[in-house]
Image 1 (cartoon, rainbow, N blue to C red):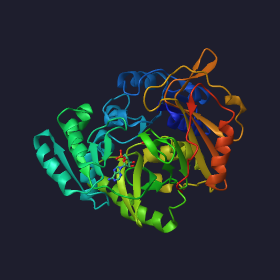
Image 2 (image 1 turned 45 degrees about the vertical axis):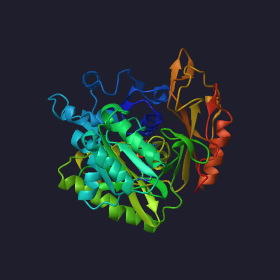
Image 3 (image 1 turned 30 degrees about the vertical axis):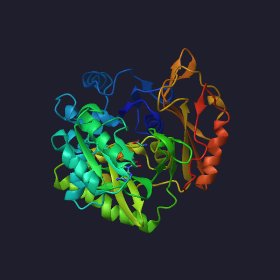
Image 4 (image 1 turned 60 degrees about the vertical axis):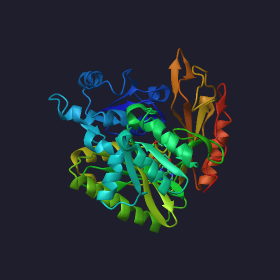
Length: 423
Ligand code: AMP
Ligand code: GLY
């Protein structure tokens, strides 16, 4: 098979790394890719939302399968674009169609879906600028902290958690009336605050059946002890040690099954990954959010633990024979630590040379914001490298990642030294 992966982060390097190991993969392309994907595939410099350019690449390279990494092209309907095109309709696309991608593209859509299918989640109401006064009243009826969510995609910045009621009202107004997040916040979901520990569950589905992949937990805040600004993710651990067999069964029965059944009942065709962000409140699992793609950096710990051939899974998803696939998982723990550019998630420098890459032997280095430039590998994004290691325990794996990190450097390199601290 000729395969195209769309995206340019650590997630896509991990996909490419795993796909390249498959005997079914003939030619592998990544668009636009990074210095890591350059090692295992051919990079093609086009945007993940330029559907016409993607079409040209698919036709020119006789691509059989497209794996969509990020949410943007899915929410914009890349799968529908393929299905509606005479020349592309038989190309397999891993990622849901536009209607189902609303599970990530609209918080309100996701909340209505969960309510309709009795999937446990935080209580909520949603508001537009026409009923902002009712929004203030709803805030008055809740206890702190207050959770405000821009309905649409806001590059991971659209959720505000505020302790002060007046500040929450001001922010609600900023979002609805002053378009703080542009069109994404013309509607705002206000949610009950859930207190607990978070984890994520990853599911592949062909729209009929599903298979559950290893769990993972990511660390979203920039600072140690989970403090400071939210980032795309600073590290991840898989499996999640506090997710007991019994708790995982509850996630499957109370959340995964009704989600896949709900997609069927609502006529939402879905061939792709479902990333379920969960919170354990007391003993109960509840859904914080759906994403219609894999997580980053969760992919960097989930896929390395997957022993089953990934292309076999993708083919079965596309042919709707996923039920016949057996998912085998490495029992060892995997952890990843993100190395980021100083300043991230705010302003940071780019183009800094990365050194030591060839000295890392005991970990897998997945490239995120890194590019090749005249024989050197330089930083090109906030999150630069993800250092993944295996261990009999997550502590052992984390230790290995930190040892590997000592061999790596670039100007103003920063990372959290406490990944796993809360487990
Ligand atoms: P989301 O983009 O919906 O995943 O929200 C981003 C982060 O905000 C989550 O990972 C949680 O840490 C936090 N969060 C979202 N919703 C809630 C909630 N209802 N209660 C507590 N924390 C939440
Ligand atoms: N690491 C969280 C995400 O990919 O959304």
